[in-house]
Amino acid sequence: MDVSLEGKVALVTGAGPNIGSGVALMLSRYGARVACNDVRREAAEATQKRIERNDGTAMSVVGDVTNEADVKRYVNEVLDAYGKIDILVNNAGLLGGRPLLLESLEGFNRHVEVTAAGHFLNSKYVATSMIERGVKGCIWSVVSSTGFQGLPGVIAYSFHKSGLYNFVRAAAIELAPYGIRVNSITPAAPAPDNPEFIAARQAARPRGAGLGRVDPNDLPKWWRKWGKTNVRDNVPMGESPTPTDIGHLVAWISSDYARLITGQDFTVDGGVRAKSWAYSPEGSDFAGPLPLIPMDAS
Image (cartoon, rainbow, N blue to C red):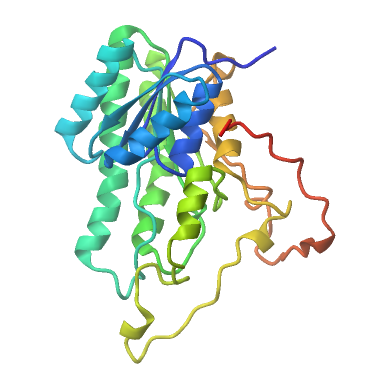
């Protein structure tokens, strides 16, 4: 019994180049036609080309998820091209940020706006299109482990990701009478598997760790350091998830087989959420998971 999205149309916001691109590719590999949105044309088009070289059907729709006119325009572009939208993946968001004691009000508000307004506007207009066309579709929020566990240095990111959990639950109840399902997925520091993104990261200058965009030379004299993060060594199965792993789950739950699954959060994290805070895996002797099945032909 094969899970298939054949005949379905998906819109992925923030579609490049890491999680969004991976989820968009996987939805295509399961048979959906995919509209790739990003505020940067080159990012949307790169994901479209990635899908097309893997024999999928895709289009690019450029626009700012916080701009109501932009959202209405690109949702209509998808409807004009493909006739409907069955799946919406709200992935657009701003990574990084600054600590509580150093963040500006402008910076805080912009981080929150991209996620809050982006999820609200896209969910509103896509859900309306589903209702008008009798589509019993699926809407996704891409959250973060930072939304339910404290992480220093990204106070706005922590705040807005946390709010998405109840956005999903409330939206799921509101849209249930129309047969529309709303769920979230919580990645845990996914390891890139997009060849183009990996190459671009390797060519870029190394980034400072732990303080987001803060220059250590600009810290006040009273500043006290916090501990370090160690992603890989805290995954019980010894390997971080990839966008491909995340995309598989999104595709499965978006299929008709998951017709009663709504208002839920899912995670593909190698056991991170199940782990006690006191447990530090010593993975040198671990077998590790099964090998990742490559889904990108490039």
